[in-house]
Length: 481
Length: 143
Image 1 (spheres, chains in turn purple, blue):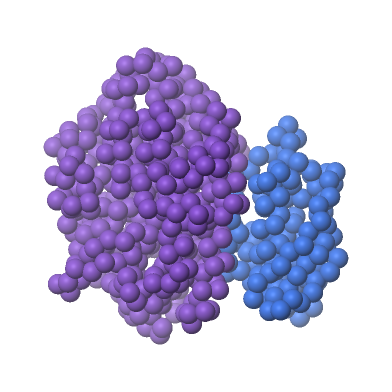
Image 2 (cartoon, rainbow over the protein chains, first blue to last red):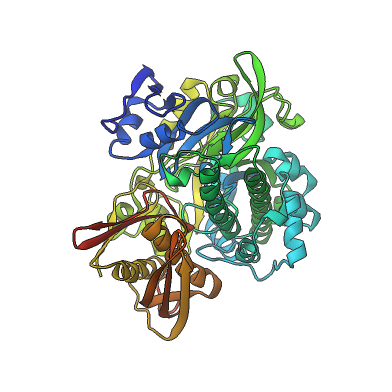
């Protein structure tokens, strides 16, 4: 069930403890049912939970969500909080795709209205939103000064330039803007990102037209504008080449910093610096700038989703398409949490994990204060996705965090081998799902069987009280990178 | 050419086996070629000189820097490597420096098979070690 050297104790049906041992400064805490734990066999992710527990200044356990899988340094699906004075920040705890995240739009049309024009909508989205490796836009070229404004303003830059509405900004985590420092971003990173704003990228990134298939919480779903039959659009992307380069640049900085500050690392990819150090301040400024790029990226793509709806339906369908929410799932943020009866400011790393603040949290906008932070959990392109909201349980147990997706269960080579003799887009089309992909390789790597059943992942967080189910969405058309 | 893909749930992990460090690096270029152009033929039409310095960490940091330099050529100029010649590997302070050349060509979507994007070369499980008369390297790519 786990690497033999690591002891794992079952706490209850959905929680597993990895007791502190050796150089660990705290326990590990994994959310999973027995079957999901079984899936982790032969995978290094539990070792990675242990490794994170070695880092200086960690408070509370090294946490893993039920969609945990083997990452690099931190596991994907990992959450770790660090004391602002004694702790560290690690670019490996955020990942290469800084502020990779998910955005959900709801349209005013129903599933029955979209079906006759679905193929055209899929083709229009594929044409208007560049996808695939190194995808760029010829219609959004940023001067160096303009790119710096994107890195400072995030989604607000996009809205100011006509890509969306002020209402959109109220429906984005942190308002779509963090305290970014463009001067902390290298010229190389800026060069990689300059013509990539408004592009979906590759790998597991996508734009997906879907519909609300089931509602579990009527009152919350109504408040989010989600009723059965409503057509929705998911966007999953991040900070593109700019973010990857920021991470790469600062990993080098942090390797040197770890040596300089005498931090012993069980895995070099966990390299880090004390939060009080100049290296940490520079990284956080650059990371926030890259996060702003990602917020603006998803904002531009939402604009082109609306343009696609206008082309296929009407301008009124486009203008009545509202943002439900936009979440970051690769980020480190300073937040205040209660620990041992004391309010403490912590740097919470979420790598493949979603913030899930409860109703009443002051960081939530008025629109969400009564229901909690919306949580968007995409599944695979053949089954379903979920909308949840944050809970008090998440705030007290996981630093206000929950899962972020299905989590892979099959390697990319395994998936491609399985898909080699199949026509995956045709199979899905026979089930009423249109797939458009930049490459066959990406579509094959992303076959539904390559992922865990996201319903199972969501059941765990719902039952454990670290997220509450609101609605289930099912795919109709998917544009893959 | 001797490399094989190892099981990894989310990313891509490769093991390279060769009889010398320069041969490991040449095979690493073949790995990059596969990651960028699949099994398509890549012709040695252009040559770029390479000077790469690894940080503290010896051969593994040199391999990391070398792979990053090859991906940089792709993300900058869409250049895909075909053949690498390593002229010299020398010590510099705490690290190693490589001087060499890489031949290849610009990615041509009409002849080359587009592959999913490689975000980065990671340090996770990164190793280069001598095992008897053989050199063995392992690298994880974030995709």
